[in-house]
Each structure stands twice: as C-alpha cells, then as structure tokens.
Length: 137
Image: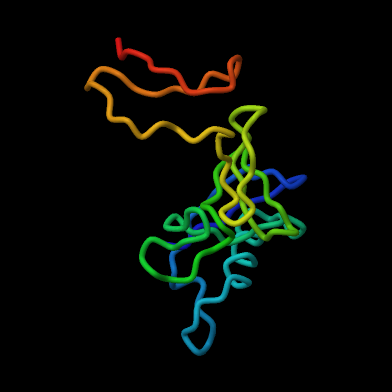
C-alpha cells in the first residue's frame, strides 16, 4: 500500500492508502502522479493537493532501505514544508528545535540516558526547560 497526504494551507488534513497496483504506469513502474490523479478523481477534487508519504520513513531514513519520502510519514495536523519537501510533526514544546536534517523536533537538552526503575520515566517539563523523573501510576 502507498500512502498519500492531502494538504490544505500546508497542513495535512487526511492520509489515505492506495493499492500499489493503482500507481503503476504502462511499464509497470509506480508513479506518484498516478496516485494523485486517482485520489483527485475518487474524491472529485481536481484542485486538491496530495503528496505521497511513506509509513516506513522517519527522520529521512526508510526503515526497509528503500527511498525515503519527505523526511517523515505524514500525520493529520503535520505541516508540509515545500522548501524542505518534508512532513513535520506539530512542535511539541516552544523550546524545542527543529533538526534540519531529520525534520524532527528535538529538546534543547538531550534526554538523560540513565536507566530508571521500572515505574519511573523521563518527561519534558517546559516550565523549567528540562527533563524530570516521573512515577507511573
């Protein structure tokens, strides 16, 4: 299955799956443009903007070794950045910084790597701009 994101005002509003056979041209080669035309026709929206995305792409790397699509798999509410040709998740906290290579938001302070007890975990606290240890209920 191929995935496509519908984009309105640079925001992903829908993510749809299309059977790979639908994307094949007369030579049997999958083409993004064929999937886009299929979705425009299916929804009777000739001016809609669709971009292919890959469930297996995260941080600009395809987990199966294939060609990554647009840095990250699109999700509803993600931004499509045309300049970077990338899908970017909503910014989780004001202090976080976009990694320009992966297009993933990162904390200004890396999460500690110290292993915690089973019932403890690290959680970002925006009011102190740092990680804190929390206890699972």
